[in-house]
Length: 405
Image (cartoon, rainbow, N blue to C red; front, side, top):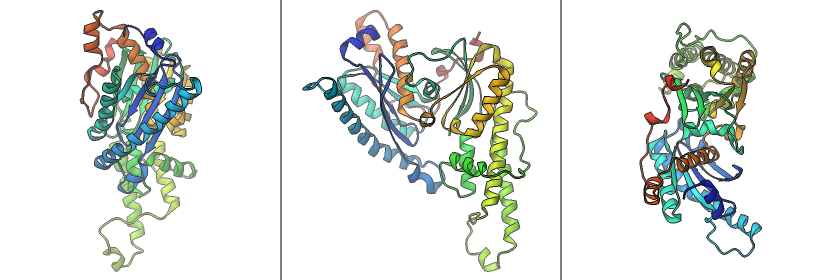
């Protein structure tokens, strides 16, 4: 396998299969290696299974991946059979024959859920005798901006705000091989803080959309929540203090309403009672969202001021990038600094296999370009089957800031 061109010639159309199981979404996708067209994308969410716990339970998530990934693979097989029948009737070849490579998330994420996707990827790559690419799903979020596009819109550089359930990062990208991690959260992520505020208010999981929905209904006075790291000149984020301030406001409200309860009601349960006052819920959600977005914008503005000459496009990616209030603020900031904002389609903001497939195409091109000349070395080094999984990104996944010139 010496070139992508030869891969295309082996089957028409040649596809890459991508698998995502880093947290609580089971997802498979097929992408054309030649045109980058997304041909098939399915996802099974586990939200209902985790909502009563207020967050993802790893053991439950792992078991559900073990159930859901084979179901998705069966759907993918049926798609390939129908797809082949439409293009070449009476074709008797293996329906998986058009798949010429597999991309799978093996970092960062929950170890017990990553292993489910990696095991499936290993089995398929071994049975089909095709290359297997182990990928970082944070980089996948970046390439969610380019799903269905042959060319990644990077220009002279791409600034990135990644806001997901587990990560909040500012990155600077020059090309596939040069992505610098500039800053990140020192504690909770932007998305995680939404989940925890929703849990404090007994609103369910995931909390991002729920908190945003309540916030959008409120147009009154906001509670005086602190702006995290207000006087810090660095670019790192922190949401633990803001989350604690929200908790104190909720406790203050609970104490004020507790005066109206009789003694019997107070001792019925050691668990805090759900807050029924929708007006207060809307106020606390709006206040929190305003402060959280203000913190993001404060650090992102400093990022623009420091690195603005190094990029022309600015992408906002990750599950929490679906927040429309955040998007409106980013639009204003980009307009102020003369940058072009980029967003993934809302359906591809959260973890999904389509973004991993688009990243996989770039990774495959890079691997083939840098493959050893010897066929024996190329075969031995290109497709290593492995069960290695990592809860965090590897040091080599992102380059140091000073390499960006």
